[in-house]
Image (cartoon, rainbow, N blue to C red; front, side, top):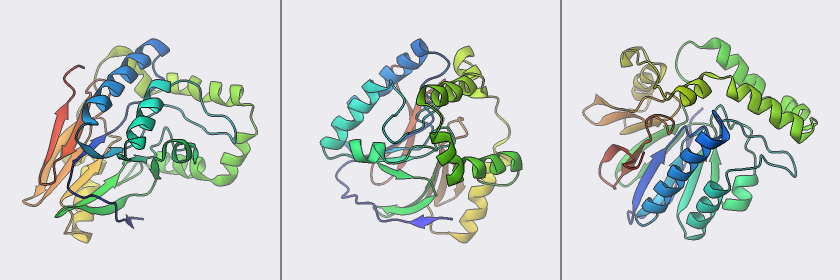
Length: 263
């Protein structure tokens, strides 16, 4: 269900969107290289950024115990803390790989966490924002699995595993995943016709319900896309930071899909 949310934006800076970094796969060395690129990009955009949206799957596996979080990622977390302390608002949509982020990132870094799609306005434009997993028709197997992962008693039971065991299990399955294979081989996913993509179908259906939306912005699909749905509305899929190193930026008037030059 969508949530209408007022997010402060004073038209004094740009809004950046990026998604699907999947830090942690396929191995430490290649993940670290991507993390350093991400930190470099964040360091560049801090000069004109007012808001930063990380649209999900920042980590390929993340689970917060009461007193323990996965080790690593200190460069990214330190940079996000710096930007947050500087007054840049940071919002993170929990994706299907970091669904078990609870309150650590909010408490330590003042990052606002989201899981459900939100509708919000920046300037004169209306935005529909979501990670994108489980939206649209089909994929019933994943939608069932999503309910299992989000079921609080299951999260409670997982917490009783020793952190070394629970994290090792999560990372083991991460390294066997489709995303890990893409990161290992350096090959982008195969495109299918956009009109058959679930997020395209979902957006066109939602546009009938919310005809005032100007931008639907998603992660999850990994294929950078900027496609008009009507004369006044565009679908933006942010791509990833595995093979594309893509992001979007809104300057208060228009949206652009870009690629990080150092990748």
